[in-house]
Image 1 (cartoon, one colour):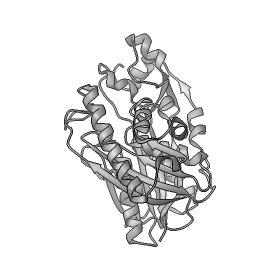
Image 2 (image 1 turned 180 degrees about the vertical axis):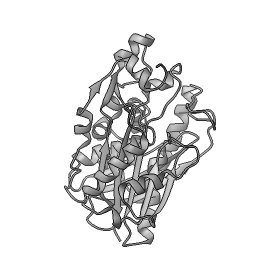
Image 3 (image 1 turned 30 degrees about the vertical axis):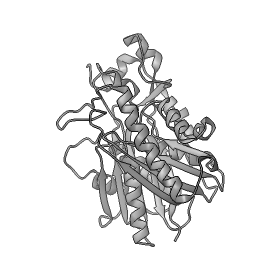
Image 4 (image 1 turned 120 degrees about the vertical axis):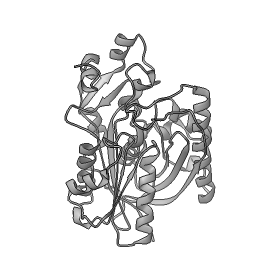
Length: 338
């Protein structure tokens, strides 16, 4: 039974801040390759973004919310430490209360983690319909350079065995222990990074390459057979490094490199980048997806595009819909000053 993505959509907040505004305030900007990033407005959070993009994904099929049997929500920046947030989004969109819902947090890998959970539901229930959404706006102290890259965005996917846009060919994962990378202690609103860059990069490369190579081996596939590759984007340099280690080219990465204009979208990084690749992919194209979460773990998924149906609102259109703010307004939105 073929299963895969039946519909999808992305949402990017309208507000942007340029790297030049950071440089004026700080004298530098510590997000490699990022020209500007997206910013949640005063009246937005990951729940409003998740509800909006879930509705768009359902409309792209089109499918009524009451047909959903599985819902998964992913984010590293939930507004509550203890509360079923997937239930909040499910209710606001109009999905059935009986749909099995789950929250996936604590790691930037959460977006693909939720997606795999959705696919497992469809594999076990051929008539099932799953909605998976990743919405994130990670935050750090304004005094920490890791904050420079942090953006905001969301993407949602409808998963089923019918009316497919892209068929799932397989997936593989790899997890290990790497303490000291990006983390957020309980009770602390900000993430931390010990900034041991060589150590962190070693973890990222180890986990992503092992997950991706395991998938390539299981599919008897080579990197050059893919037209698009989607890789976790803490900045715009890291995915290029991982791609080259795996044998992928800059041309294969180009369609999904959204971090240049949006920054680090956390758990939504790979989902938004996947939506961008689907927007331009042709029937027959194959897409490799590789996520990463510090700590550490990686998921790799392979898709084959089987329909030329696209999301009504493309990622590029969302990226082009923007309003620039200066660093002072950015600090106000973040609550750093009043």
